[in-house]
Image 1 (cartoon, helix red, strand yellow):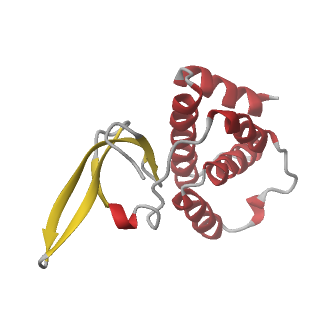
Image 2 (cartoon, rainbow, N blue to C red):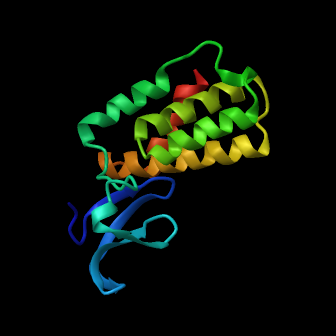
Length: 161
């Protein structure tokens, strides 16, 4: 699926680079692992090759799909779940982020920006917004060959209108 040097997205952690594919022996069985270094944090994650899909490891979004991510951000939804309890929304948002689907991450980001227009966000809401923004900006920048600052500016401009 991946080879050394490929970029891959690990849900909740973001974009990483496959630095190696290593074989390890456990209980007398040999298993191969992707050694993934997360770009933003320099954290290293070992992902079993056979479980890569199961844990959500995937390739970067294709450059021709980046515009569709911006479309998700631009969808203005009335009655965003601001009335739902934060704990319920937090569970839903975390599930969407854990899915690793960039479109789901964009939906979380959009909802939190829209809620922010009507009230100050709680500490927890701000943390989820920051995580969603970080994940989305890094992946779009790398997929589109753009500078992160220009992606941030475009995202921010969507919500200033």
